[in-house]
Length: 122
Image (cartoon, rainbow, N blue to C red; front, top):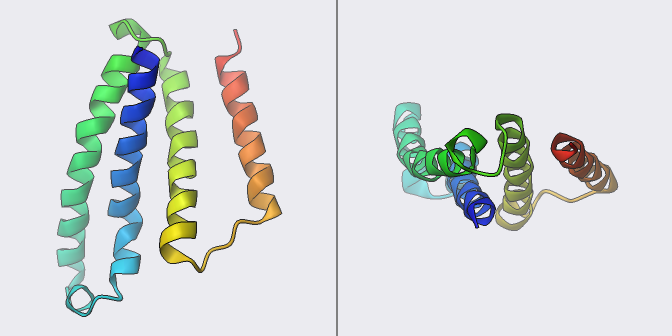
């Protein structure tokens, strides 16, 4: 159960992270947003990133083996990176619609799956 909760929290965290880090690139199409100075964009992104931390920190605390969770520190990081890239890919393809998913991306995901396999291999 803790594994599923950790993964779910990491997914939600990474959704917020992706919007905080890359959403402003798409929001530029809104006239009011494009008129904001860089500091305004940073403050808005920081506000969104706050919610990322509200999910990321509990995910790591719940999932960390020394806190009674199922994952080592390295396993948590590998999971987070794979989830992050998966969320980002969906975001790029769905929100931007100018990005294409190519064979080299599929191959790189295959290597990420192998990275997870090796990170969890005892």
